[in-house]
Image (tube, rainbow over the protein chains, first blue to last red):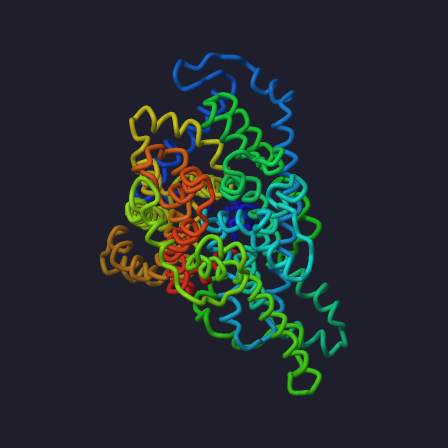
Length: 318
Length: 302
């Protein structure tokens, strides 16, 4: 079970009758002390590192706070300022485009390559390693620097294009039209990690389903649409939810490629990059906290929509 | 998905499952198989070409880097490495050491705290367990940005900015809940009869955990260690916030500061140190791939 389906099945194993509940409580009582002792580090972390900061950031979002003086209560002022903040709107636009384009592209490529590799091919382990490696390297500053060179005016991409006789003079990362595209490409390049998850899922599909379908004369497309896709849908859903949540929080690559500015013309100003500028560049901690809460609301809404939509396309075999 | 863990992931699946049920012995099948391999090889080359090119370019003078897309190296030019190593305020080894300290701390922290929590969730019955477990799952999906501002204020008050404590301490408190979940999944696959046998032999929970569970959990612990290694080594956001003194920089922050110190033009040195920074990740990937694949397959499945 994945994180996602665990959450949707969380209430399943509750015993129904009062008697069973009492029996469970009695059995449960035995381990209470041990349970909480084992859980202690996690509980302390939950309270100190997560819950208190969560509440504190909600409070700070209603204040003006620059770290030097005590926070002053300003009510909904930070949220009202967001409505008129053109750079915030731009950062939302950039982030939404990034999420909506890069996540489906990455997952489609991951699924396509996983299906190709799953056909009992020789060299599976080799191909899997080669495709998986970029997703381990992709989050690093080193690769972001490489991207900065590759997509520069005289970078690798243009050098290669010139070899083919093209007049390549576009600075991909300095042109607002293309800069975001290079970051989307970088995200797609890291398709290896969902691919590995898809490969594991494809192996779980019993071969007899395909054999039976072949006997019935099902076409290749039918086998994909009627067997592979439904049986893989929980895994696709899991990847979709986690990749969307992750993509909303992308930071490193945009920060390095634009040298912290979101340039050119704010075309790579990811939401978290703007949050970082306001919070840790200008030390407007109140505004940054309000922005963070807006991000939580957006990510929460995106996840809720995903869960809601999943009822119509995700198929649970169990 | 626990049965996945029983299989050696590097071997091909026992039954080739998939769209082509027909054997590839027919002429059309063989042609298609060759075509598929050609596609995959072309794709693989395209995927690794930028990284290999960066490696080769790190051994060329900067002027040559910008003219040469090829991968053939006529002579090896090592000045980028010697120059890049000393281009920043400290030798690059200083930043590698900083990163190593943080990574080792993070690995020890994650292994200890996540395995304790996972044992509780997977094997013990206690009040509000379902509630805590759902909270744990939700924290996996919570954006870190919503807690980062107050965390910064807290660690700043405690005088811990420019130390490694804000980077290491949270790991000892199991804040990387993803690994708790991964270990819970793994423990669920271990037969309960083993626990009961140990209990009958008079073991308490601590003994069951430390003497029996930990040795059995080694694959899950290895997965955790390797993922923690790779993610912490590459982590950029946290050190960027907490480490402002150049002496305390970890590798990613130091690497980025090349853009300021050489106005981003000394590509030879930047590429050389980029390659140096990727070597540990590459080695972890090479030797730990089996555990990475197994780990993400166990947690990622339905």
